[in-house]
Length: 408
Image (cartoon, helix red, strand yellow):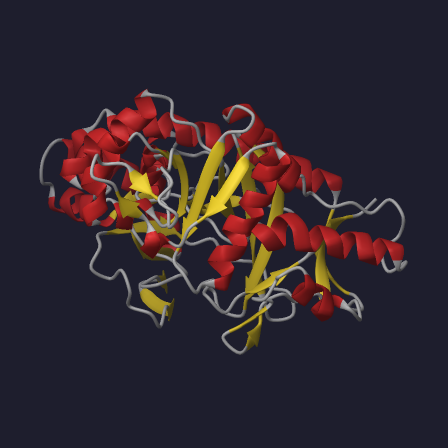
């Protein structure tokens, strides 16, 4: 894994404008950055990222079954009691999933380490699936990259196939996101593009314009019934929204399904460690409250936590991360080494939520930037990667997206 300086395409900004990639710059800073790219070997892609991501997703599905069978785990993941049956029934019914994104710390040498799973509303889809592929084709045509150079990127094709597998031809799907957010709209439009290519109908409606009919069905801004709804609105918010009471009786199939609320929650990480302790792609992780109870000797279950914590204590003591179970863009995350905070998020959003502690896996550094590898799961297999890098140890909303290639 290397970071290689490359000439930028002279026309890329005009191209971005033409295709509607209008968040290539965000917050007054560059977001898309092709002044360099990350290069991988085939082995690093296949054995270091693709296979581990696919295997981890299978483990996550095992974790879902484990969580819904445990009232205490549903409580620890802060699933509202009134809607726990909604989440559990979604899983038991076999509601289909479409996509998700693992975030990995990976240096090309040691095993990739799972930082978190964006399993419900992951963004950076358009730039991963489409714009970086166009970058590869242009750089190949210009001779910047040698013939035979590839990219681990079958994301769009996998989405087309997935939608075609899940839905009958000519089915209509609705998509929604909060109005006025170009990045979110770019994500739902990338999904809509795949849906149309799969021979299905795709309709967009701003989240704020979705209504409820007299008989309890969701309606779009043209008063059409919504039978299938992809919502770029996280379940942790939706389950606390007044509309949550109407979901079960609406007859509407939600994408991602309600059971994904268990995977997009950082409480998943200690559950995975408890189930698969020592797995090479996992980091030791514990609910903070469990550790406190275990150290105080409160109750028999805490003995198992104390024993597991003891096996990981040296690694956690050397460095660990404190994360709210519900958090986005690094908000309220802090990193400690030997008991001292070495970095913490400037945002205190989500600070009210319970926390986990996870062993610290330092991101590799290239030219002062630290990359996080986003491994995209479509259906149940890994279909490609996207890379964001940040000067901070905590990847936040000012990170940059970098293209990648696989050396031929």
